[in-house]
Length: 300
Image (tube, rainbow, N blue to C red; front, side, top):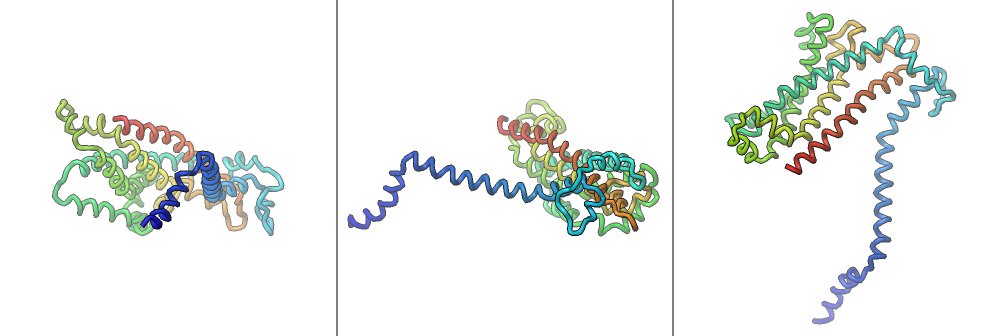
């Protein structure tokens, strides 16, 4: 009986006899593999953006060269100045239109989704699950599918009022995801927290804004990022509704760099780089709020 026990105990004995120096030797190898894997993933996702930036500083001749060169023969940094005065595309006005629509739709979704998500998370009313299911089903519908109906509904909205139409459309199509993600975060907050606030004399709205919202900042940030980026990149509804070039957002205006006879690919990539700068700034600003929300929730 002693022999089997000895055989089975040998691996455990060998593991227990591993010295700290041996363990330290094993850790760097695992760390190196982790770092290398992370760098490969980062390079994989950054490569399209790097290629976009490199193309944005090429001359027209470098862009049209066959076979193509990845690196420009001459850095044409003046593209970032020329693009603002390009006759076919008013980048400044298009960037303004995109920002107004994206910010407006994000604020509208937050205004509607926050109380809706809070109510759904805190109350068990009849038809709650069918309501959530119907809300989720609206996520399956996209502006491309409803383009004809949207045109018939909003074709009479002219001038800058068409931006209001796009705000309503983008807000409606992104509202379902915001409600779903925010109600999940509200549900994670114990009901006892709200009950204690109500016992202290706070009303429902005060409880939501002063007690629950500081604890669900990560969910709010997730909804903001999702809605803002979806609206910033939206194309179908803007293409159908906005006919005047000076009112078109960047997604609709940029293809005009590619004319029938002249194709200014370098300017199109330059505008693409300009278009992602506000998104990067938003991420830089909102990241602090995300970390602050996580910390606040853990402390409370």
